[in-house]
Image 1 (cartoon, rainbow, N blue to C red):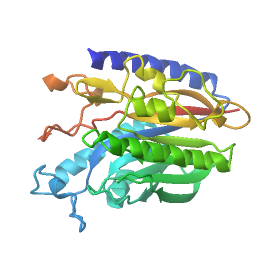
Image 2: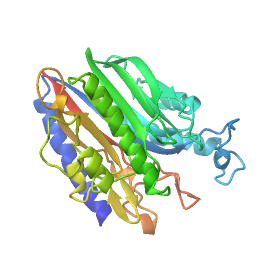
Image 3: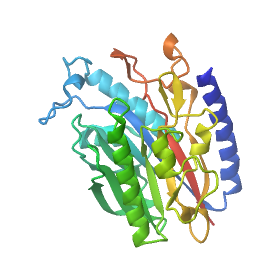
Image 4: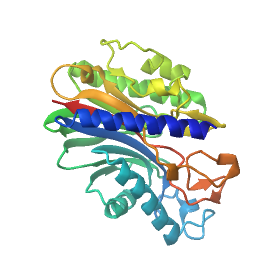
Length: 322
């Protein structure tokens, strides 16, 4: 039932977004997205370890055939998503990013920096070189075992600051996630304090729903009105209030994947916020597993290989400029 609800709502949202893009056809519209691609490992042993499950002969029986299927599946999603800039989470290494870019039909450049995660999970940014020109990329320590990826560049000639994050999972004690989120928000405040006109785009898997205490307290996700004194607003968070999410945990849809924009995108010259949503196609949902019917069609469930896409759905925002 919940899977059907999110499918209907997202399809309707897609229709509305198509209308919005048509209305804005005389203007420049760009799409910024985020996608947790779920344990995107290659088949080569990592000298530092952390990938033993995802090797030929490992407990996941991860081999060339399964890796190729994963590449094809994620490329299919990203090609249809067609974002101009996309943050990715749970990428093992640069080899996996490069193989993905070579599999995609869409012409993307990429930025990858190893985050030092114990499981070998890192972040990456894909971007269309004719839309976005990066000039700075670095990892940012945010009081978490997983560092954030910061990329500064020009989007159609306008400077933007893009931050990609992946917070500690729900399997960890809440204090680790809370500390990481507080530190992450502190970094955004640092950027905003140095430049009140900064156009900040924060994307990632926060492993926390907008209704969670830490998100309401730090990121003000429960507020409908936008306070211009704060550095960020949360365009997607209102979807969560209607039962729409990007991930299923304990049989509940949750908006763990989110995008925050600086309030500078609400007015003035340059790019402005237009709309947002969760990207979904029917084939991205599990229609075979009884216990997961209508949920994201993932690669593994309980150690069983399903051959799907990811346990997350991508999220996106649209920005427009006259």
